[in-house]
Length: 443
Image (tube, rainbow, N blue to C red):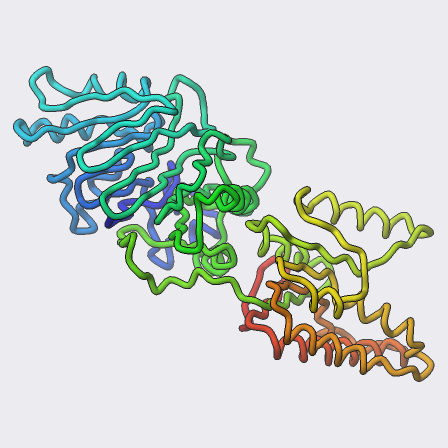
């Protein structure tokens, strides 16, 4: 199955032609112009067709002459540019076209087709299955808008050699759309709002997108072989290079308009997750939130809190509570400083937050401020980090860029943490520094 991405942008594309935000101007300067989302399957089956799509196809050197099946998800104009049916009718009077969509889509499309045009309309709703040419199509429910544009649907398309889930537009996937054992070869799933998570709309963002991947994996719909690609991108997303780096942690890709995906064949795309990741940053840099996002698509995460309890410090308790509230409810939280034992026994994903507080606890316990030796425990942690079989992410503070501490104990701790960070980094496949909320891969 060959998928051509005719467009990967949201309703207004990316950049929005009327917008002067940093995201839009940056995309414009880089020449990254994304049109309205649509995908062409094997040259004959078109998924969605907004008003920009036919012209965008031509700019990519692609003719739509051989399209025999048009599957439209809902009647919002960026998905259902029904005038294209009229344009087709001006030049094509012989070869049939099958148009599939929910009731509101079919009602809109009928207005643009002449009585003698060879167009067959097939009205569908979620839960139905149909045969379209060589493809078996399963119609799935979307969480998007209301009946006036649909009700909106998603499409599960199985061809002779591969299976594709086309999931745009939607908020969190309805339970009925999580197909047990689907083992999709490819998933095109919308991710409209990037880091803007307070949009209150029927779309996904960089917080809710990996959660849908987790749910799809839990039922076997997404496997290690599945090609995960984001679509319906908008200007709330970070620049493409940063977005690609963040998606890689979830085994996903961001591709340009015109990209071709051959499903059912080996790919050079890296979908593996680094086994050991160190995330560094200063105070309030966003390092913890970023580290949590790296495992947001995983089910069985063990979150290791090394902070301990401070019953006499309400402000600290409030910080701990805020962290706990932010974490997914299905993660297991373990409060311990026995990182060596946990790394040796762990099998599922582990998130350690953070090494700074762990080292503080160790140095306090051995009396490092009065000459006690903590280095043996650091050696043991580094050895356990190097040998662990678990996927592990650790958070730590970057202390090499600040002022020289005024006290001897402060300088001792700074040096000890800097050394620990360097040793853990040397034994990590991935090292990321977070500055002002922006992750910068160092390795």
